[in-house]
Length: 77
Image (cartoon, rainbow, N blue to C red):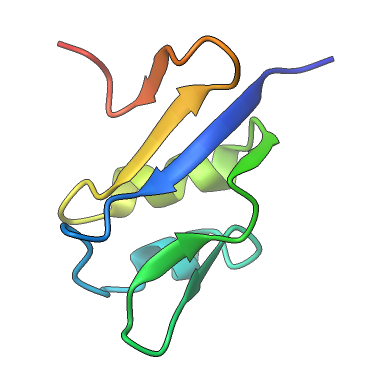
């Protein structure tokens, strides 16, 4: 069984670029205010969700390992 991720969008940072929706249309949606939110905050590790986080121009998407909270993206320095 693979890793489980917890996905969050910092809505104070989100600028509604929709890059996340472009890279992972099954993983993210924009609401009426053009703010992104994950379709399923707790999900299996998924390359498209990671690509979406990496493509966000303001790094508003945070991915952590489910249960442990260890950072997946952005990486801890």
